Length: 267
Length: 305
Image 1 (cartoon, rainbow over the protein chains, first blue to last red):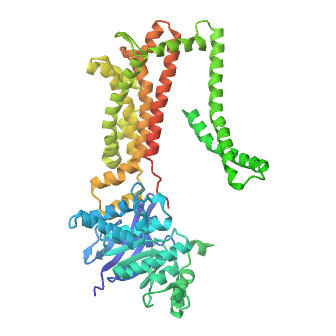
Image 2: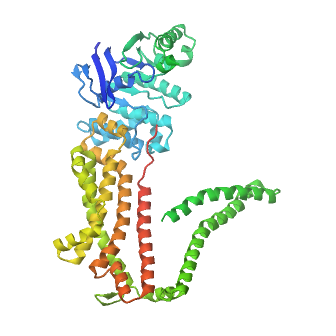
Image 3: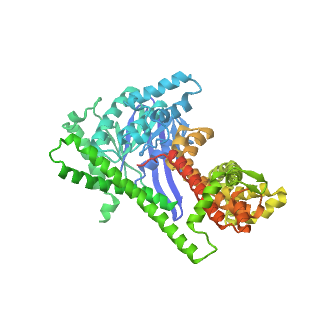
């Protein structure tokens, strides 16, 4: 088993702004196994999205090294596809065309036109949106848009799926529904996932490991929690599971006792 | 133009208040009617009410204008009355496409000649301006390079360029087209460049993660998201071009609505000048309206969080 599929080594992130430099991340060392589901949790402004963007290659670290499958992450690549918080679908393309854009880029060298089309249909079927293929993003609900975003990311068969608060903008019921679907999809595709969230239940329900981050500036990894709940996980059954509550309490303790949100601590 | 837009935007709230009033009174009158029969007459009533509210204000405005005109004409004997002008207009429009000599042609030919100059000058400006706008928006060096030149040349009246056109092309017609080209190009360059610079970072991140080729970025992301900005530039350009052509033709002569106005001034035919003013206004309105429709058809609802 590849223990260090994603390897983050002593990474520092300093942003140069007009008001001077801002030290966002300090001494981040983390490795993610192949097929593992890791969530990054912390208060807003703790740099969890920055860390995700570093793994995506959208940002370059000021110091330190990031590796994916033993190769340095030098820039964005379809092998590390991202599901954005605001889904970022192109409004002038249909759902099908949005997904096809990624599929075409990754597989057009090896696949025939028919195969590309099949891949796109399959990805949309996986997220249950076959019926909405011909619709534009503004014609479907927020939850459906997010599912198209997931389909676009998955259709490229990435080595790593990166998700930046993918369900943050959705209502609680839709969010629960999509979490369940994500669990099934990840089980089926055996994807390696790194997900940013601020939702404790979401983190415990989905993760193999929860990475808890301290408050910024100069945020770093505070604690890492192994979630040893058996899969497949079922939300209603887990609600009464003692171990589940224990994990939940651990994360809550970290967030609200040890590392209170800076705005609250000041008040 | 803005009055028309206002009238259009007034339409909706007027209709909705009318609907409330209409359905209320309807319910009071026909209380014993079956409920399914109710909406039909109610809707008809509101339709009439909203139509009156749409048509009445502009008609009042026009009537007011004609009244002021009539008063001025009565006070000033050089100025034709509305009636005289309308009779003259009927005579003029009964034969818009006659041709008795190079300097005596129907108003239809004159308008078409002007439109042709605008089309050529404007088309050339679009061919140069839009790609230039894309380059300036995409490449920071070019933006720095062209920025000061554009800022310097943009405020210059296009007519100041007319002598340069005459010098270079040694003929009136290309010189007029040259003035149109110059005045049309700036809004298109500036708006296109601004559109490119304002493409949401989210879309560019998608492009980076999907690792799209520069061609795909251009066709699938840049072009569709810049299109509304570009069409704004096109709309501004065509408005200015139509303003400028009248003035340019007054200076260059030949055939064209601007020259026609000047010619009729030399003949002291004031009714024709007034008719020309209305014609210029109507053509300008149609040009702008066409582009508004075009812009609407190509504007997509932007992605929101």
